[in-house]
Amino acid sequence: MRKLADERSFERGERYFAAGQVRRVTVDGSTVTATVDGTRTYRVRLDVTPKSLRGSCSCPYGAEGMFCKHCVAASLAWLEQGGEVGESRAKPLSDKRLRSFLSGCDREWLVEQLMAATKTDRVLRARLAAAAGQRNAFDDRDIRVRLERAIEIPDYVEYGEAYGYFLHVGDALDEVERLVGAGFADAAITLAEYALELLESSAERVDDSDGGLSEAIARVEEIHLAACEAGSPDPVELAERLVTRAVSTDYEVFLDVLPAYEEVLGSAGLARYRELVEQAWRELPPKKPNDYSARRFVITHLMEKLAESSGGADGLVEVLARDVTSSYDVLRIAERLCADDRDDEALTWLERGLADFEPDFRLRDLAAGIHARAGRLDRAGDMLWANFTDRPSLETFRALRDVTAGDFPQWRERALAFLAGLPPVKGPWSPGRSTLVEILLADDEHEAAWQAAVDGGCSDGLWLRLARVRAANHPADAIPILLRAADQAIEVRTRDSYKAAVRLLAEAKALFARCDRDDDFRTHMTAVRDAHRTKWALRQELDWARLS
Image 1 (spheres, rainbow, N blue to C red):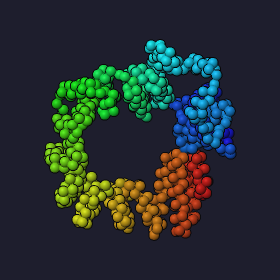
Image 2 (cartoon, rainbow, N blue to C red; image 1 turned 180 degrees about the horizontal axis):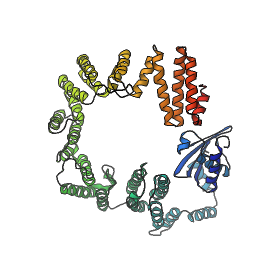
Image 3 (tube, rainbow, N blue to C red; image 1 turned 90 degrees about the horizontal axis):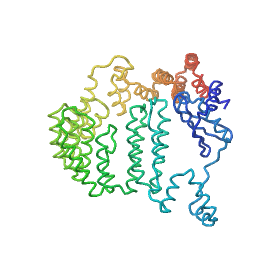
Image 4 (cartoon, rainbow, N blue to C red; image 1 turned 135 degrees about the horizontal axis):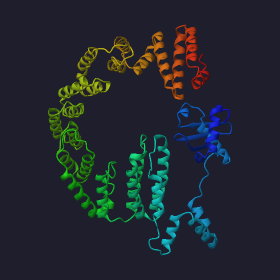
């Protein structure tokens, strides 16, 4: 560790370890994982062999490949536990062998083992109590308290603390999930719904930039469904709770009840579910353009799922056709009709959408496909030409090529002329004629692509592709492009970007050699090392690649 970490990181890691900031140290074969609480909770992985130790961490310093203070702290915690690893995790004893062992054990010994286990395992105790005839053997108060302690937030959880917060939430949900397989599924239903209430009430007091809240809600929904399938909820009451929760939340809970809950709800529950959703649908006011309210979205989504589950395409189209206020509404109807091979009906809707709303490339694209299937290639070409001129790209160019088939050469000539006629963006490194360059490269017209880039500019990625093609016959042209790309990679300042920069410099070195300019390359590398002398990781990568 002292060799891998710099002195400052080692001292800080020692302090983190001494302060008890390392948690969840787990050994799996030759891999050690842990979490370390710092400005946020960081994930550490140590890979151990008889001759080496490697560490990686989710902190910014660790992202550059450094053995950071969190790696030091995790390593010290692992050493305190004995510092042992194995070739692989021990193979667990099979159920058959364990059963055979227990069958031969003394009864009193088994009773003592079970009683000892019940002192720390309340679920096991409740299962045994229920087997002994106790009614209402399971008391969910402890798990309710555990959920409250894990989820409720007194102040605010900042971004750096959010990962640790959701880890604790996950631990509490593990306890709820365990109830499903332990014979207390009905209790798990109630607790899952309580967990959703807690998560929603605390949602605005946690920084959810990494999506932890959505993941937690999805986990609760999975537990709830499994508990409903294993338990015996009243189907009508369940339907009422599912609809009430869906339409009253801002977090898209229970949106996709159908078809997942169909068997659980049964005929009575489904009838009540349908009644409530249709009532909410009827009460919605007519949709206005750009009306994206959360309540409308939820109720519409529930109604669409319900309509399609019972009426297929016709049911869904009937719902969608009630409020057509945008080209996207038309697109959804047409796509569903096309899925059922009802092209003529879909085309009627598409033509209406193109007439009633602003031009939409998605409507044209779908209409072109219908025309092409019917053999109307000219009409399909007109649709896709409009898309190409509105949104010039390799994608729209290829769509035009794929549909127009034998007539494509004339379309291609027209497309290249259109692109060449666009006003160029000034500067050789601007996006400029990127679409033209990309099309010419795709068609292996390398000289024309190079000239288009020189005349009108293109994106950085295309310049790099051009350089590698150009290097075969014109290495001197490719050198400045590779050097510029290497400079850009260095400025990203991560270990991976430094490795990318080194690969680019190695490519450039070979081209300098082909041009008999080895001295120029050495001069350039001296300047690179001098400009970035404080970047230890970059210097290390350059040394390993022997670039100087």
